[in-house]
Length: 331
Image 1: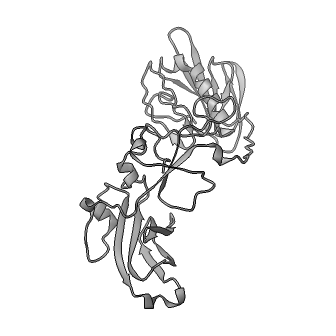
Image 2 (image 1 turned 60 degrees about the vertical axis):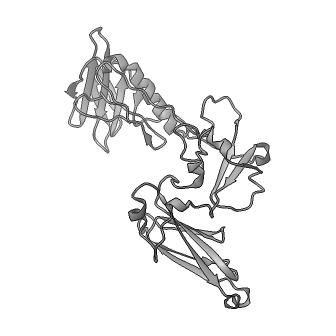
Image 3 (image 1 turned 180 degrees about the vertical axis):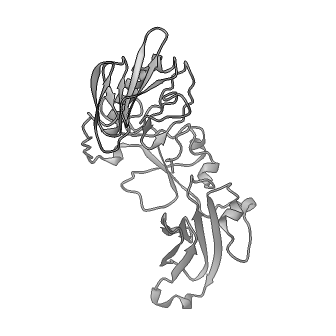
């Protein structure tokens, strides 16, 4: 994708990959580069943008040496030409019509331009890339089952009953989350105790717990056990959780974890810095197979190394190492 920022036509070029835009500032005589793509290769987009980056690099010297000379080639067609003092030349032939292809004359040569596209000519003669022409085949991904026991996974369960006394607020009713957290956390716990007479539990039937929420999501725990979750939609954030509550005779503790969409700020595991190599040693991890674990919410998972097969280098296996800045998929 080519974009125009400010006056120089291509003084700022970025590559958009995997729904991420890395803002890289540019100026004359300084070429920007892209952040390495992470995760599995998504074809044809990855290959198409890779060829775009290669074409831009071929034009690098001319691009950073001057402002473009813009020439009209037709009603919807333009040529943006960059020239260096050493005689180098790079041209971008654009067709702005959204439906019709065009044939233009540039430097006494004919060029075919698909609708709504740009052709890149690093030497002002030969087309090496066109934004509307995709020459990479679509990926054919085949998912194969594997034995999860071969990996050394460890788990750490959040202790629902270990909420800090220093951060606890006692109130006669439910408080509005944003006013309480003031953007210091995306999570807010609501806890209460309910005394149940054994005679109220009729025939072993579980009472129904209903919770109305203004959004975005809610996790419900009864006596330390996960009871269920509910969440709203993009169109309507409000929702109602309704589900059986495993209450027992005596005192029962109900904990509601209200979530505003964002990173899991406010969990005990984050306070223990479990996302860092040094913080992992502060918790007692349990070795187990993912296939044999019981269904439990609020669990951190850790694996020391997960090597894939193949010849790809770096992080192109689709594995995110959660030390450093990639700590949004740890929990």
